[in-house]
Length: 54
Image (cartoon, rainbow, N blue to C red; front, side, top):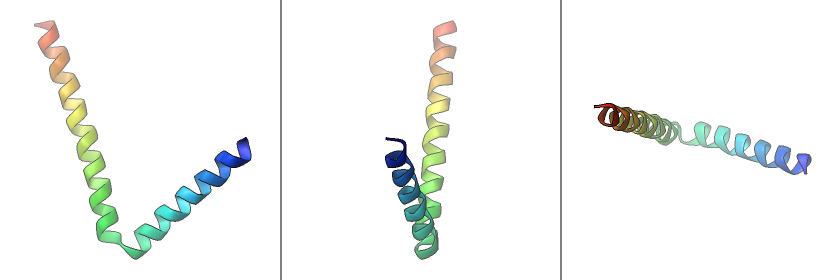
């Protein structure tokens, strides 16, 4: 089963590198959107706990 995980991980990495090489602008937008989503979620969790504490 470990070899299946390694093959899948290698396929994902190869696809990501291929995507970055062939479409760098779209890849940058995807990464930027992912970081934005994480930042928004972090803010929401912080607001939740601030509201809970008050």
